[in-house]
Amino acid sequence: MDAERRYPPVRLPEGAWWDWDVITWNAGEFRLAAGQDLTYHHGLELVFADPVYVQCPTAFHDPVFREPTSEELVRVSRRLGEDPPVLVAFEADAGGREPVSCLVAAERLEVVQEMVLRYRRDDAVPGQRFAPWVRRPG
Image (cartoon, rainbow, N blue to C red; front, side, top):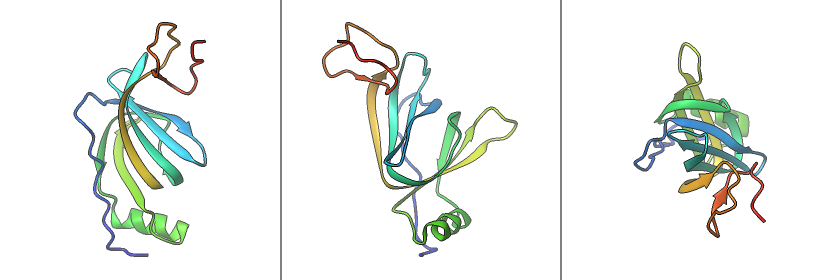
């Protein structure tokens, strides 16, 4: 375990990414979706491949990504027995009086910017992505 390892904050593409929720959470993937209003679609996803540690509410607003503290790194590294390849930390509004601290450790992180519909639409163009719970046309 290397207490000096650095994990820079996630940099998001330009956009209105204030509403966030979890759209996939299983052994192989932890996927966060973001947009200005998640009612009909989202335009950004953080895809964590092979997540090994997740401390995050299922929905939140206005995250502020930061470098993990040395204490957070030590806590996760002790739990895993080694430093994770990816460690993302942020503070977010989860509806309480104070922001909640969030931490995600995984094998890889991919930032995907693409329109993903959250409702069925019969006239969707070929290749249109839909949220996992949407039954695709046809």
